[in-house]
Every structure is written in structure tokens, then in C-alpha cells.
Image (cartoon, rainbow, N blue to C red; front, side, top):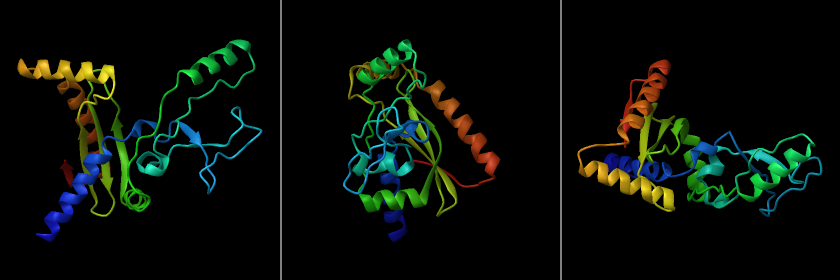
Length: 196
């Protein structure tokens, strides 16, 4: 019984984590913060503050929730680049959305790796392939269609209508995700594969 309860807690945590923005992981930057959670100045940076790549702790921790995820700026001094950088910065609303406490985030980053993440497709499908280092197995977390913005609401309504007509516009992205997950699973020769 205790094992089942612990498994349920683990799976609930992974289900919650599947809503976090793993698509920013190792691809985008945030401002590096000091011990007081203030940006660190850097006169050599285009934005005048030190930047670091988004890591797993940034994605899952509430300490970084709502922190701006930076766009890549063009590095040249051409006026066109400066203008595009200005407009890109003004229209960038990307933020981190993790909700784990500091201890929970630390434990999560020690235990799990993100092996593959499918960000929102046009149909609203998203899933993450987690690797549990403790139990030496993969776990797939599927996220429901997000409805916190207009596009997400339209995607959710379209999916609901399609399902009511015995169709599924998310089945193709699901199959593509599972093919990628299967390749990763076979390449590492892991035998344990869970879906939550």
C-alpha cells in the first residue's frame, strides 16, 4: 500500500510538471539573479545584465515563476537589427511557469531528466518524456490542451468537436511523439516504460 501511495505521489508530480514550459530548456536564456533575486549587471551584455541558459530547475521552480524568458538578439550593429531587436523584445511575453517549492524542485531535478518534449502543436497536443534516474525507467506525461489564452481555447473547442464526431486531431502528433519516445527508449536499451 505504501508503494502505491508513493507511486501515486510521483505520478501526480509528473502530471503537474507536464504543464511546465520545457520547450525553453537549454534553448533560451533568462537573467541570472544574485542571492537577493536581483539581476546581475554586465556591461558587456547587449541587455546590460548577465544571462544564462534556462535549465531544469528554472523551468520547474516557483522561485523563477513569471521570470521573463529572453529572445535571442541579433548581434550586429546594423540599424535593421537594432529595430528588429527592439520590436522582438517589446512583443516577447514568454515567461516561466513552474510551481514547485525549492526543495521539491531540487528533488525533481536530481531524480528526473527531460529526454524529449513536444511543445504545443497546432492542435494543442503536448507531451514530455521523463527519465526517472532512481527507478531507471521512462515516464510519459501528457498535458491537456491549454485554455488560458484565445488560441488555446479555440484548440480545445476544436478538439472537443472533433472528438464528439469520433475523430481526433491530436492523434497524428501523439503518434509522432510516441515514435520519438520509442527511438529514445530503444537507443538506451531501457526496458521500463510508463505512461501517466
